[in-house]
Length: 362
Image 1 (cartoon, helix red, strand yellow):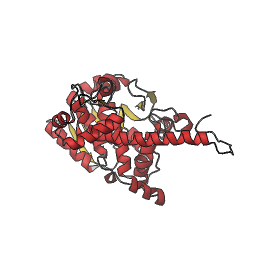
Image 2 (image 1 turned 90 degrees about the vertical axis):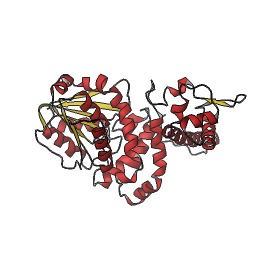
Image 3 (image 1 turned 45 degrees about the vertical axis):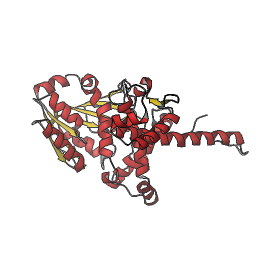
Image 4 (image 1 turned 180 degrees about the horizontal axis):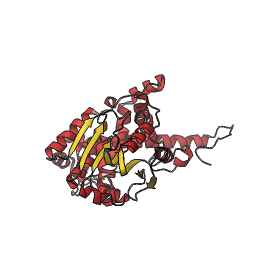
């Protein structure tokens, strides 16, 4: 049986109830651990403990520049959560290398503590989402504290980390064209990390980033200015009705289409804005449009929760359809095909099973 089967039991199964209660208790405990993981990431505690010898709470607090009493309590949560190990005799704590392998920036398995921040954010916006449930209204980006910071970290890991070795080579000949000099748009650029990396690598090309969030655009502009880049600019812009006919050779979007006011209209506008031979490189969540296909999809429950609390209400708040995070690769591919692209390729990269990549050509 699957989680979608209909059960026809009439008798109360006390044993099943006890097992499920145990599962709920584990969920509650793990949820608290996730929030503490997010806190440890943001406070630099995992970074302070990685590759460090067994240390006391005082030494860890000093290394991280934090207050020892609070660090000690955080370490207790991490110890009972089996994230950190504790030596009772020595009074020292250790972050095992096998655990650090998925908890610090640049770790070989990626930094999962970045995603733990979504769990904390879900709690922070609970009252706002409750109002949405009761009224059917939507939200705005300003309702979400630290959202652009979290997404920038996520993008730096899933996109930026593989950008030159795995992502750009998906479109044959694209790297050569970027080196020669082309016009590039990043639609929904956020804080601009990926676009800035491209502008640094390909000085002959010209880059522009549009995003609805003015705070994210301000951050991107500061970074570009600090890097001394004259071939990239950023503009706060609502992409509803976007179309700049024949203006670009390459358009990218990273996890940006599904929460637009008019996702299909944006895809059509991107198609119209590409020159002959142009490429649209689109990344989005790789789940299916069919719930039953997502039962074993990586972190599907968290993605649906993010959808309920963020992506769906953000779209509805703009007057959009509320497609949600798990709108499905099938939906995305159909939109690209209806937009009139001559060829549409779908890829899943080995390092990132959660996302899907489309290469669409005019």
